[in-house]
Amino acid sequence: MTEASSNTGSENHPREGSGLAIASGLSTLPDPVDAASQAASLVKESIASSADLVIGFITPPFAQRVGMIADVIRDQLSPKHLLLISASGIMSGDHEILGRPAISLMGMSLPGVQMHPYVFDATLGTMDPLERAEKVSRAIGSSETMAASFFFADPFSVPLVNLVPALSASRVQYTDQHKHTHRIGTILGGMASAATEPGGNTLFLDGQIRNFGAIGITLSGNLQVDTLVSQGCRPIGTPMVVTKARGNLILELSGMPAIEAIRESLQGIGDDDRELLDQGLLIGRVINEQRSRFGRGDFLIRNIMGGDEESGAVAIADIVQAGQTIQPHLHDERTAREDLSLLLDGQRLYDRPAGAMVISCTGRTQEFFGQPAHDARAIRHAFDPPIDGAKLAKAGRELNAPDQGIPLAGMFAAGEIGPVGETIFQHGHTVVAAMFREPEQMDIR
Image 1 (cartoon, rainbow, N blue to C red):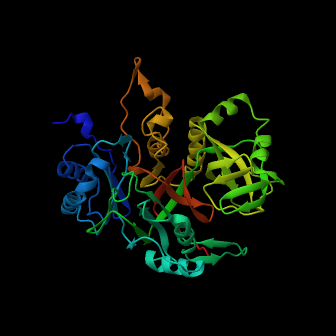
Image 2: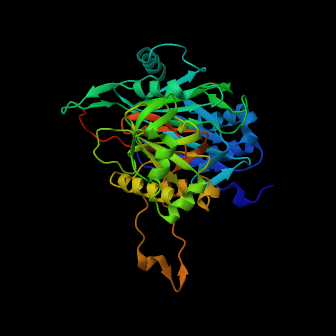
Image 3: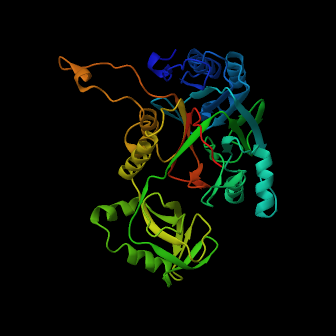
């Protein structure tokens, strides 16, 4: 028998009427059937109608019990579609659960939304990029009414080097009145992280249990999904132009051997930043070369895989081309907090979301931040009403105010997928969030 504190689920606030409604539920009961029943009950309490879609995240102890977990969820919530993904850690409400048994569910009532589930077995074979994008577009159900597509994959069987660009290009394209090209809808998700070897992850989609490939669902119609992608890094040193490259190797920067140029770029950094170099240096690649100046958010962050002192080459986790601009970056706890906070400030300009789904890096847990569920708490409470100082305390005691956070569920992933600008990328060290809202009425043509 577990303690009550071990079985808490996130509090949800039901929305009146027949519009968009979202609820989340968490259980850490050790038995998979009991845990699924408790998490589903918490969702059901806050959604008056049956759930159209349920997306759930389960920790490794439950990865081999997905079938019975799914049966319980379908029995209690009767979702039209059900996705389950195994992860090393999960989020729900203000909670972060790592390793031990846990289930985090998000149930959604989506009136006026069309749902298109899909499966990718592994690779797309050898084909040119246009053909690959067209095949992916058909597979995910891309259309002019697409709001978002949620994509989850096993990292051991799905090479993303060609698939992610195809996902990005698969969305319907249009040109606005200023002749700028845009793509409709967004794509986000992450890589299952419950296993450290092939065959150990579990993906479930509408009765199919898989330990390879990818699953997903595309939502189209009466829904707005706003995305937040926080890479949690800041540039240091100076920008440099790649003058010679091969594959993922940066051979020369501004005409100098890459290692030498990077060292020279970092000579002027402060003592605090120099100490942080011990935690690892990253490379940021400029996304939009048309900008005259580059700052935080203008770069796609990539790991440095290694360097060769003799040749001066630096290998990074990306394909590099001559003419691209790169700059060294640092990733630390303070910057990660600040970056997410700045992006949430922008989200506060819009209506309060009905809920949020969060995909965060396995490196952004309580070990990194020094507190549990930092990303989940920051996002969930970003839209809370301001607290009246006079009501905050009385007679020297803090009042126990009711929870105001939005419903939230998510996982810690072995790689995050989300947009930066108009392009979808695979990320690391990143938190990706989907904010579900009623659609704004506007003409994109």
